[in-house]
Length: 216
Image (cartoon, rainbow, N blue to C red; front, side, top):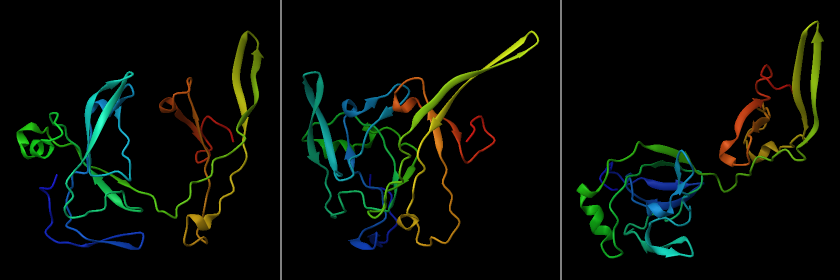
């Protein structure tokens, strides 16, 4: 979309590199078919490829049970970077429209009556090219799976529990902080689920809260 502009052309700088001067406005950088959207139960998901912006993806049919797409370029006459810049805050908004053929794509978006209302605006920040992943604890294992039985007269209490072990992480703070003299802390979060689906895991304890149900 391009109807929101501020009227000035500030310099676009990311991670110390200049990419030119561009007006502050929303740009249409992706158009995807509903066939490319994943249904994961209670929500829909789509992965934006950070190095493949200003693209229109049109559904052209099925092959071996998989949807097939044809990609077209979205006009980018001003030469705005066609990839996500590092260490940059982006504001994202989406809307739906009727399907467009490969040749009438631009015309479809000129006919505003074919567009839905726009979504709420969300933001995200891309990572710096110099940023390093926070290390994961390794050698996670269950060291004990037991139960305590307490008999008090006629009352019997059974408490099931497991004990886990994992290695401490060793963090080089200079990879994440310019001033490594500030106070620093490491917290371990424990997630659990009854199935391996990555979206089903829930936070059950953290070392940030030592008064919770988990003992560390």
